[in-house]
Image (cartoon, rainbow, N blue to C red):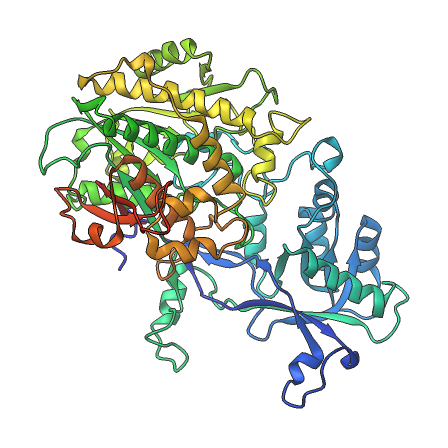
Length: 630
């Protein structure tokens, strides 16, 4: 149910089945000849691929679709610009599926960019593109990293910002793919992310076609399926969905599904009673990322650094409360990770709306005194391992910055005020905008690794991964420890600053003795950007969800899905926040089920980091955490 669309913008997506198949013409001898398995005689289906999808908002559509029947055509193999030139000129058997097979990041970007894609689409000789994501080579200068690649807008969520925010092109590397493809109805684009799939396609082309201009027959062909029927805008999709049709099932996905997920939140202490007058300090980060493809890979490495910093802060506060060193504060501290911020701020918009309408229940807009938004924190402008600099973009936050700057200096963390008066895209903008129900007098700070422009050369792209975060500070060695130490020191400075602002009433430890745990930061970076089935995720989630964690090999998507699908990243993050902030009792699963929740609002059983397989003794987690629908 959408309430007040003007206050809570939504985008919609038509649920789809996306597959990519290899058509091996006249090569049935390579497959078992069973009469009832004709499909296996013709097609070989890829194992793992990602598709550019279609979305709409109130005014437009963006993304790609292949139509109901999909598209098919012989492979035109591309590994140089000459291959593109001959394809758009006079190829022998059009239309083709262009397979772009750059084996370094720089060559991929050279072959797959705004100009080359437009040329292929306009030529009428190409009906779809398959892009290889797999690169060769090791880490370092020989890795062939592209100078820049950002298929995103120069200013995120333009049209949903304060009047002056998008006067500045924050993403100066933008190539605007996400808007370019909105005008094309029957032009699918797939990303191959499995080495065996890439090899199958190239070997088929090499074996049967052999040469683009003088091919052998039969030709090796591809079939691309990515049927997304939404067209025009969200309003037009709603109108079409309201028409009676035999193809829509009450139990299945709808014709228009709203993008959405859940925004995890939590308090270090028990949640405040209703109508409490204590002020609240909000610590926020963006949980999702934007991408041209609906990925099976995890992108947004630069933004993950903000998530990791927030969770590391939560772990530090939880450690202090469980040890008894910190028992009471004059102000409340509230952690939240907003999902859906890439798409018109649907996460923060929903929270502001619910708070303003008294539907949130834990505090009012008038209780909020400070807001700290942890933006991109992992990419350094100087590309130097020894002197990272973080920039504070302030809204009535000079006093907060002075306190933070002094504490950071004592920890050898370099922080500076941004030289711009306008604020960058941020969840905080919703909370300080009276237009959306916020308060303009909230003291706010958006903390980022950038001043005038994003440092991330790969923002919003598949190249923004763990390698990007590490490579930005240490080109000579794939060593995560440098980034870990930077973020740990920054987390320590933030925790100390927030504690001083929150004013401890009962504390048995000096603020200057409080430090983040570098091991936690390192584990979180690897879990979010390298291995979803990591030990940390397996240890902190509800044991009922353990099978889901262990079934994922590699990373998972950070893309905002629809509300009828649960994003694995959101599930893991919700449990991390509960585990880090919560109270732990060493019990078995049965004992945990019978345990009184003792005034907390969330209870679950986790394996913990010292799970006993024989006795089944793990951790019963009690916390004041939850999640809000985006």
